[in-house]
Length: 595
Ligand code: GTP
Image (cartoon, rainbow, N blue to C red):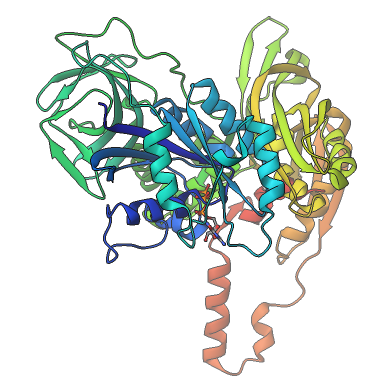
């Protein structure tokens, strides 16, 4: 145990965690130059393309320091707020953290929130000033910020560049010197914290854990304390670039377990593994279920593909335990699924994975947060889709989820950001100058206002100089109403939205305008109406198409005609026919595009 170091890298998104991790792996020869590719740990295609880390990863390195060999377990964590639950579990598996700050950006919202997480878990923090190679870097200013924030000495901060490999030996030495070896009782009852899992279609779910007490041997009978499920440890091992099977994983170390688990839901990040024959008295503290925050319907474009979609969702869920879903029906779209996501990014990723990995073409409906509706009969209904909203006459009051949002920005943009937040029904709770030019703002605001387009708006009005982090703080009463959309007189349930009463008229109007832009013209006129209950509050019309699109070809060239038809077919990809109106995917998201 004396020679083990468990650490993670925490940083604001894009401050260079994955790149630095690559350098550490290279320097310790964990990967040969031949196998090296950029952002090695981000092994999902989607992660590579988007340049973001979605899943946490763990990898073991050996490092010789002053003649002794150390085992370093690196746990790479995602930076986006949608995946912060993974960060918190990864942090719980470590004794230390490298805190990276981009020398050209300075401290951002997730630098602070991740730092607090790490400090709450008593991790030793090694401050690293990253990207010092950038021409725009401001090493001295950013060091000032770091000293202020951490209360550390200036010379504790290691200047580095993941890109150029600067500072890598210093960082490795600091990991050994500054981070304590794990504590724990090697002979005690087994307690291993699950902090990650992967799906392997041949071997089932691979569980990644950190042994806090005791040891775990191949062939042991084990129990997951929160789910109560029992398994045999068919294989245990450590995580190099590939898995290395071992006969035992000792106290303090990080490893994987394979035991024929087929369903991701049985593996809960944060759960504790113990030995069945000699169980621990209690589970490791701090386990909480991941809570989905955003809900939306997912429907197949072709109604006949419903069963295929179900199969795809089941498979995807094996891999993504944070995804929850159940079947639902929509009058407009037929059979589909109501899904819960951690946030909008998670939702986009699920949609994209369904399309890429399972070849499904799907329509997602207007996202919504989860409301609690207290009825006149004193019942509490959970409503996460507009269609579930009961008749207004039966509602006593409605509660919606609120968050505490923390925004860090430059002083110049404070006014604009406060304006934006006020418009989002927020309450300014605090305003602190971190340095002369950098301000931290704290708001309480409805989650519904953040999940939609808030991020984009914030970026625009601050020219990119604002970062956001938030946490759920509870439900509060709000006057929400259901806004219905009718096309040629028929209510299209998949287009309705739940909005605040004060904004309902404006939204109805804007939504109709937006839909007019987004609905393709057809052979007949389409009336778009917005209604609250029986009352129509806005109307727009999509004019009928005058000529057949083929008329443009003047009857001539057949190959051109075919091309045009092909083009139309492609355009149809993500469309749904509702009544006699064709609705493209964008229309279902129109509510997100309203200014
Ligand atoms: P997430 O996983 O999405 O949280 O991002 P990350 O923190 O892992 O950042 P990543 O390593 O993906 O780097 C983000 C971007 O910064 C990439 O375009 C990198 O090429 C670039 N980058 C990383 N480190 C350095 C550095 O030291 N210098 C320079 N100039 N660029 C860097």
